[in-house]
Length: 177
Image (cartoon, rainbow, N blue to C red; front, side, top):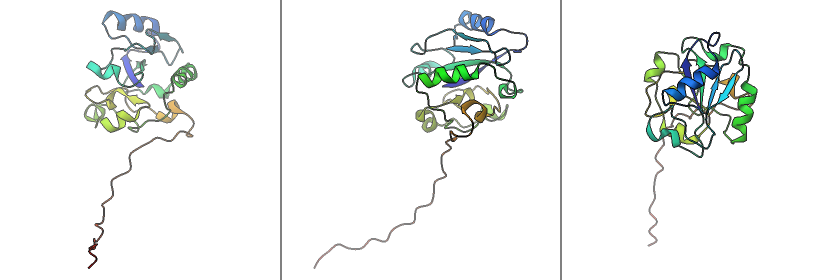
C-alpha cells in the first residue's frame, strides 16, 4: 500500500478532477482522495496494477494499492481533518493489507528525496510513503503522522532492530581418543 501525493490544493481541487487528470497522463491510481472534502474516487480495481510507480513495482505483492492524496509535501495531509479515512482503511482491511508501516515514518521534504529505500521493509508489506519505495526518487508524501493513518497506537510501527555484534563462541574438539 503506497501513499502518493497529487500536488494540488485540496480546498480548490476535487478528487474527481485529479483522478481524471491521472488517467489522462497515464498514471491512474486505485483511489484518489481529497482529505479535506472526504471525496474518494476509485479509478481502478485493486486487482489491476496502478501506474504511479516505475516499472514492475506496480505489480509487487498480491496487490499493490496506490492512493493519490491531494496535498503538498510541505503541508502534511495528516494535519487536516482527513474525512473519508475510515472508509479507505476499511477497504484496505478487506484486502488484508496490514496496518503497519515497516519503513517507519516518511521523512520531511527535501530529506525524503534521498531517504533510504529498504527492499527488506518493502517485502514485508504494509503502508509506505512514495519516498520509501525502492527504485523511486519521489519525495512525497512528506512528514505525515503515520499513527493518524494506521490507527490509534494499537498497531505498532515496525522498525527493524539494530544489528548486535555477535560474540564468537569458543569451539572445542569433539575428538574422543
